[in-house]
Image (cartoon, rainbow, N blue to C red):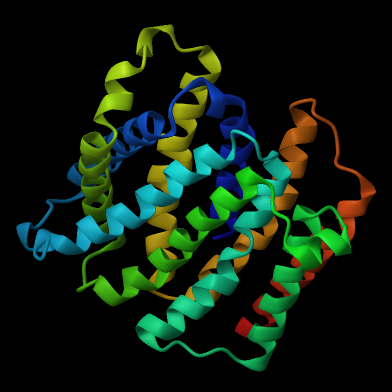
Length: 283
């Protein structure tokens, strides 16, 4: 999940630069198709895929639908949300995942975990609202942040759903089923956007973003998430997302955008402390 947080961060910086150049449904459909091809190739190269792994295909349709919803809303939100703000919204997923984890699989939190999630959530809000306590109290989210928040709720729901619906399948095979189902749903739902996209005329940044999010921020992170979800409580799986704003800040600095104002640093510090508390709880 540490690697997961770093790989996801890249999708915010690249996604914000490509979001207004292609329809969210079109790039997400292409992302799932490419990711399914990569994971399928890896799975076939390493082992035979048992037919029994794809029993009860409704499970994959449900998981693929929920996760594809997250990615579409992410790109829609990044049309107007800044990368650092969007990554801060993403850090609210552990808190939501904890709630969904209790509802679906009755995972309970210790006091340390509850306190850490609350601290991390407050730190995320501090970054999103840039330290404006009045705006925070009124929950005046920007349009992009609000759209992405709904997507993050879908992501948080997906985590305990994996554990609830998995029937002993390995992470690689289970990921492949989810990607194929998600790709099929998106190809049907986004068919008009896909047909209207001038694929050969897209700027280079769109192709760079597409390949990155398909391979690194989809295929690889899917496997990482599936692997971790089957071994850790939902809230702890997503706890590593608290590192994502730090990675994004560093990526934006490397890409020449500069560092955010010092006003966001207390929020970043709170999310980092939340991660430390959760890891200490693991010990």
